[in-house]
Length: 188
Image 1: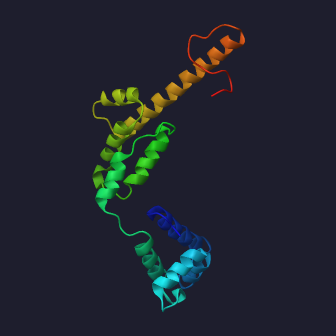
Image 2: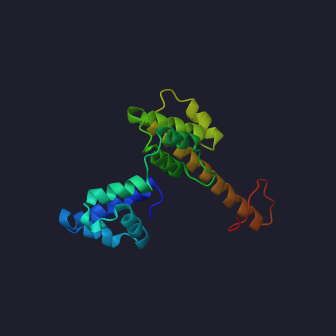
């Protein structure tokens, strides 16, 4: 069974796309949905629609009844809480972090303030203080500009570290001590 709103919504969307791609009309969508859903979900659905068999329901009725039980509508404050508490993980790139923020913002109903909310959370949640400081010096910082700067700084940092690591490895292979902390090639 689907565990999150995204899981169920994505599942229904994929079934609808399958029906569209295979030219399956509305009269056969119920049969497709019931035949591709897992046994656990089907048995759960049978319990929800009893004594009526699921095949006697419309596609929309099945989707709605499962939606109501698998993914009851969350409170907006909970969605906002999750969004505002999300910080970039140490192992997460800026782009991955931004994608997660966009996913969390999906149910927040920010409306026209979405871009500002994403920008603010991006700046506040970055784990790189130097990138945060750089972003906080920008006048009229937009989401796109903040993302561009953060990704550029992240890339530059990775490139510098890689160059230093290679230089250090070369010195070590020549028997010269290396002044910077690094690990030889292949050792992380």
